View 1 (cartoon, rainbow, N blue to C red):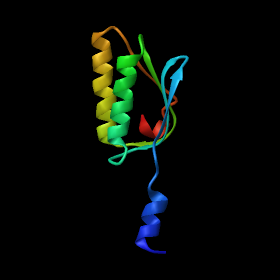
View 2 (cartoon, rainbow, N blue to C red):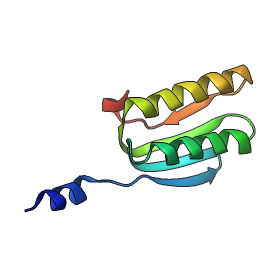
View 3 (cartoon, rainbow, N blue to C red):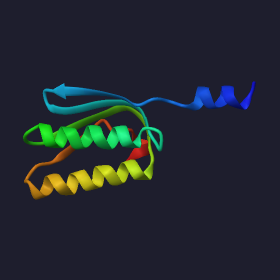
View 4 (cartoon, rainbow, N blue to C red):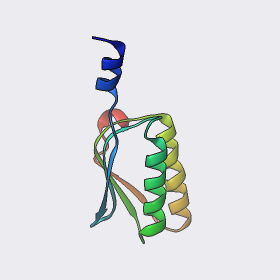
Length: 96
């Protein structure tokens, strides 16, 4: 198998879906350098769009690199300043 084939097999996509009850996003895949901009934009948009707490269903997320964790920390601080919370649902044990 060529190196190209291995890269194509290991490259996972990030799928993001809006949820309304509770308000937030459901995600599946990996948050890495390829998907970081999409992840950041989606989470920021949810914060700006929804009122109250923001819920992220991460039950289908397999990997979050440190840059993605920083996004979550920054968003959590921003929401706290507005008396809101970032609620992470079903974060895999290896990501905690």
